[in-house]
Amino acid sequence: LSGEELGNNINIYPNPVNTSINVNIAATSSNSETYDLKILGTGGLLIQQKTVSGPLWQGNTADFQPGTYILRVFNHDTQNLIGESKFVKL
Image 1 (cartoon, rainbow, N blue to C red):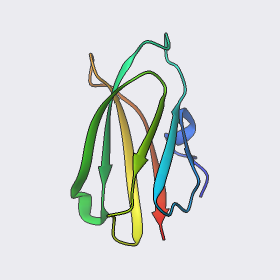
Image 2 (image 1 turned 30 degrees about the vertical axis):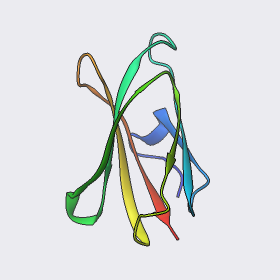
Image 3 (image 1 turned 180 degrees about the vertical axis):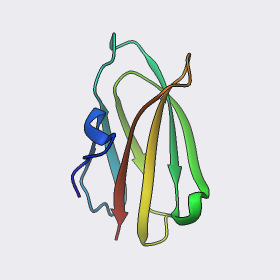
Image 4 (image 1 turned 90 degrees about the horizontal axis):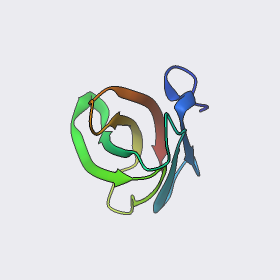
């Protein structure tokens, strides 16, 4: 999966993911931005939510069930959706 739709602002690697996921957010205005990350499972169920500072984040996916997940990144201040991308947990 490449991040086509709105995902061109987010780079998720590795994909598929095993125990940890790396997220690189394309800087929208400055690298000191704060972002809200939401990981959703199939059916839109919120699995994990984090607030992160800066464009890089690494998360632990060891407890996730195998399947497809959606990562959404929002600007923390404006709550505008910055990007959305899918990843697969093995």
